Amino acid sequence: MQLPPRKSGEPLNLIPNARQLTIIGANGSGKTRFTEWLERSLKGKAYRLSVMEAVCENTNVENSSDTVDAIYRERRQRIGFLHSEESTTFERLMILMLNEEIANLVEYKMAVARGEKPAIPESKLDIVIRRWQEMFPENHVMREGGRLLFSRRGDSRAYSQTRLSHGEKAMLYYLGAVLYAPEKSWIFVDNPGMFLHASVLRRMWDTIEAMRPDCKFVYSTHDVDFAASRAENVIVWVRSFNPDLEVWDYDILPSDTGLSEEVYMALIGSRRPVLFIEGDATHSIDAKLYPLIFKDFTVKALGSCNKVIEATRTFSELKAFHHLESVGIVDRDRRDEQEVNYFRGKNIFVPEVAEIENILMLEDVVKTVAEVNGRNPEKVFASVKKSVIGMFRHDMRQQALLHTRHRVKRTVEYRIDGRFTNINALEEHMQNLVREINPRGLYEQFCRKFSQIAALECYNEVLKYYNQKSMVPRSNVSQLCGLNGSKDAYVKSILSILKSETAESARMRQSILRCFGLGDRQGQSDAEH
Image 1 (cartoon, helix red, strand yellow):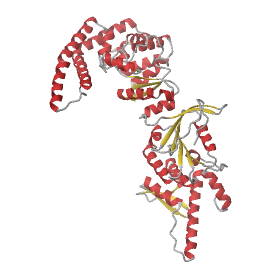
Image 2 (cartoon, helix red, strand yellow; image 1 turned 135 degrees about the vertical axis):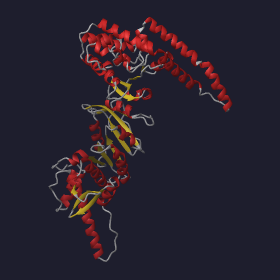
Image 3 (spheres, helix red, strand yellow; image 1 turned 45 degrees about the vertical axis):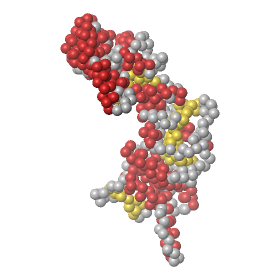
């Protein structure tokens, strides 16, 4: 199969042995027209399924020749007693299967009357009911008076197909409709996950594809989990469409890239540079703060720093494919300058403070919140500074130990990978390693360094080395700024200021950008250079 006209050059050819083609793209990218072009190009070999159209009322039976409705129209013209008042494609499909079963039984009785001993043929309805009950073992299907009735185990009440949920109707529709596809056709499925729970989605489509081994499937979807679940799949990413020239900007996603869901989401949903960050997408401070700082980026929260590092690396390696810039942000934590510089060389920003909470405590951030809330910024910051340095002075031996532990762990990870011929060599290496690392010496160095920082009251250095999640509430910064005293109130005030697009928000944003070594830059799409 040849794919549609391509903006950047010759159209691409679909890989010959691919059994599935999955088309992904942002809303408005031209994904629907892309699939329509493919349907037209197949000239009678295309067969279309849309569960949205199937379960919603549709009194006008489609005139196209590649749908359940078209098959129903043809059968009704040929067999006059078929119902004509069904209002949905789903109901028409049920009538088709029931009618076929009746015809099979009549033919069976006529053969018996002729003295033959035929086997009772398995109808499409038999296949659908068997597959349905494999998917829903607690459900039962009965035939009664030319209609289907459904019940659940432990409940004697039976109900008609009209009382099925949209998800149950979708399952029945797909199982039945796929059996009417012409031999060796391409089956087009719009939004294969609609109405269906994620727990049954993969299994259902595996079942359906197995029911029609002669056919190939074209899926149009936003569901990256589903796209990744297809075993013989080619994924086409549609970026945009030019309706005047009828050409698309699209590419085939490289295989074996190890792309995660997060990277897929960035590809599908964004035409802007991508910023991967730590934290939870809903509740973390990172996900609330960074979109207001790096405004020209699509910000994607991934959870752990390891996921940020891996996603940034993978996305950067695929730049020739997606043409988007990508960067990451990880907390500094207890990383030394060598680690920090390594990450920055890999397009991963590392702030000049230990963690996200410390960004909230930057001098200009504190002063701006105080000023906006009618407090004297100099007095507020002086009190906050005194409190934070006092906390650091109290905790500095514990902090020195944590920094020492991190440094020892990283050094051991780097040095332990040597090749050893026997256990004695490994043991000797480990003993020498302890002497070389000298944990006590490292600890004492950190203690001296932190004592000096505290003695000189170097506030920025404290923020750089001090990991303390409770710094905001313990410093009393929220109450000093005239808020209700809670951390949430202080964070909400910062976010509100950043959203305001005022001189105060610009000052606060620049302060945070400088924390990333970006100076007066605006966190725009050139930030990675």
